[in-house]
Length: 222
Image (tube, rainbow, N blue to C red; front, side, top):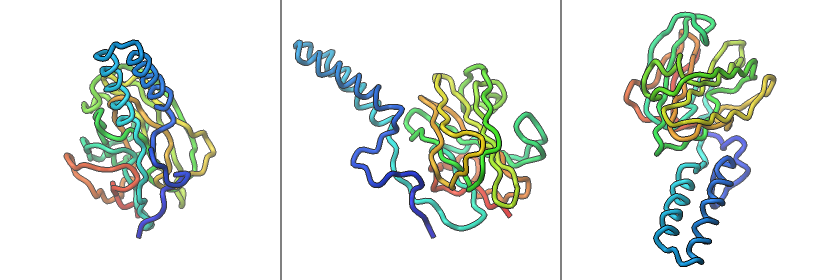
């Protein structure tokens, strides 16, 4: 059983994340202006940039699984890590960590894995190693969202900046009640999402799997 896309605002002919609208508009304006001046080749270059930005900031609707006990992927991309980790900076106890790497060609809008209430949002400055490396989880710029699920169990989603990513967007605050698959932010131009799940979660993915935000199931939480 699947559900509607939370916070979709209805069907949109051109679904684009709001963060990209001004960049797309500015690039399109420059392309038109240069074309009017007769600078055709440069105008075509900016037209290409406009098309790429529209592609990068796309925000398609998704069918969200409705079954209880599921944690869905917060991002489109490739699974690069599935393992149990000890208590650490983000994990309040031993937890199952699943990491998804987003290339510049993936949709970069981030979605909440499960229903729950935000208990904390914390930003950590850092470096910009390539996000497909495991050390990026602890060394790169990152933003951690702690979520209390129904039943009181804890889940943490960490947005990790990548090699060329320089902007982490997080639109939620402590106390917000969110639905599975709801949009909560994005990371611009290549990045990584780390999800920390209860230790008895049964993983539904393996390293190398491709996943889609809000749709692909990462694990089954008892």
